[in-house]
Image (cartoon, rainbow, N blue to C red; front, side, top):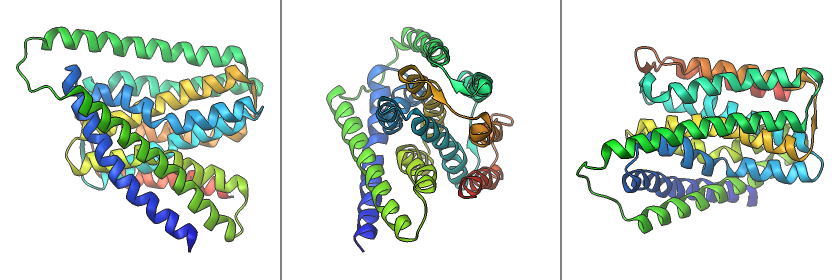
Length: 305
């Protein structure tokens, strides 16, 4: 009963936090005179990836960096497969190629590069540095786009949001989302343990969903409110933060020794889910929803096997 109550509280906090967080993203974009999608792929994605970063750093400093690797790769499958799959149940998603091409191209290459780096059975500190350099390249390109956009919009007449209100909404919403994710992991893990599931299965499924709760809530609320670019931008940006910053940081702290066969399902299915959100005529069709959810189900099944 206690675990069920914790889950209920987690859902309530996620709903409230998601609403505040989404408002904060929109207001921050208006205040900085930047497209909401750009804020979503950078600031929003970095914030929602903070639970995975926390897990990764703590695990790596405890000489168990594989935990962070599994959480980051599993969260990517959850974000795209489950998050975008559920989001597409609301209908087709407008996704102009010119707006997402940089993030999507980088996201498609990251799993392939990671698998290549793992062919020798480990992610060394040098491999971690490679991933962090790729992240620096991506964020630099994003910063250049932001500067160009501000130059062209400097004379535009618009109502600017209060920076204090935007920041407060963003931070309080993020705090509630992260808290909801932790409570979800706690409550769901208690129920799963009572059902006799192993720690590995609990970690690879429930922990990954719990740390991805901020992205999931952001996607669903953005779809409901018609702010499609924020949800898509957040999951793509989070995918890159997970694959580059979190995995790269974990490997830089402590080399990750793991068999390529162990991580291949997460990397391959993660790549498949990204291919499934490639837009067709600047739209992601609604029928791909079940393919994405099915890909996540296959991943969960392989993990449970």
